[in-house]
Image 1 (tube, rainbow, N blue to C red):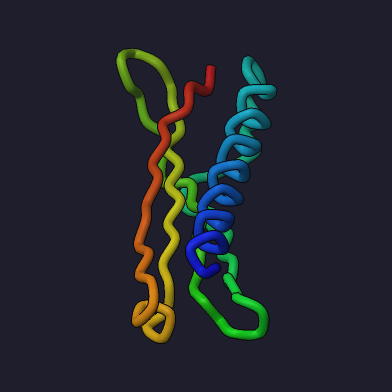
Image 2: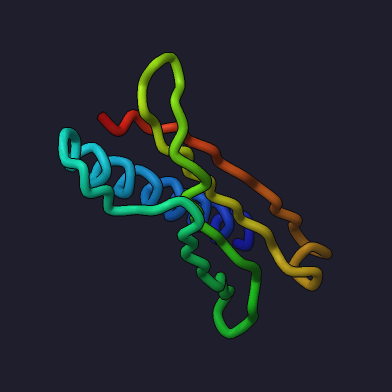
Length: 100
């Protein structure tokens, strides 16, 4: 059961990342960026009433990759020490998204 819950949280984080990347691409050609480097969104993950861990979505930097302006996003998920005894999850997803 806990494996299904953690897979669900990974799926939620992935979908959140995709939504942000889609929103970002809708601003193509616009000089007002919706995100700034250093912005973070932190989410507490619970399994019922038990705290299970934390997920953090962060805008790392705006950088040039292959002569193209890009934004570097990072998403990390980590379970707390109590849940680690049953199932340890320490995952990270990094994405570089084309801005203009």
